[in-house]
Image (cartoon, rainbow, N blue to C red; front, side):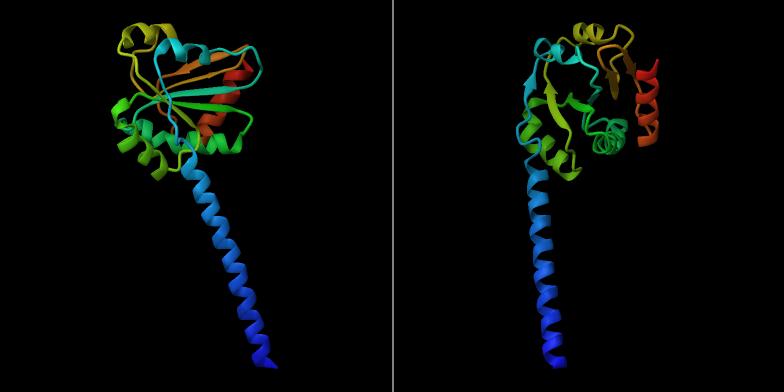
Length: 174
């Protein structure tokens, strides 16, 4: 009898582990499919994304893989996005289009970046930087937080999810 009980427990354990394994594989597959297609925009195509007529909150972050502070803040942006699914986050990469397949996609997968990523490829940075914010020096990371009523620009890296949460709250409260 004890032998049958042990076999039953072992069988149940194996089945439950098998189901968990399948779930993990499915989750990994879904994460790997995110950002499979990274569109390349010029500024004219990108510019309409900076405006909304709704109360929905948007966070647009300019970054690059070669920018240490940008890479350090990405987990905070990702955590904020996960906690606030009603906020739309857009990560605008300033990396080179030729590196999308060989560097950018592997980087995003390795870092588990699930926010939408697009790549900005527009050589006239002096023109489009001023159109975004005339006070922006052009350094990154650079973040825009906005809805239809409020808009704020931040030319620094966020150092915690809490700092980003507080900034969003304060920005939209004003």
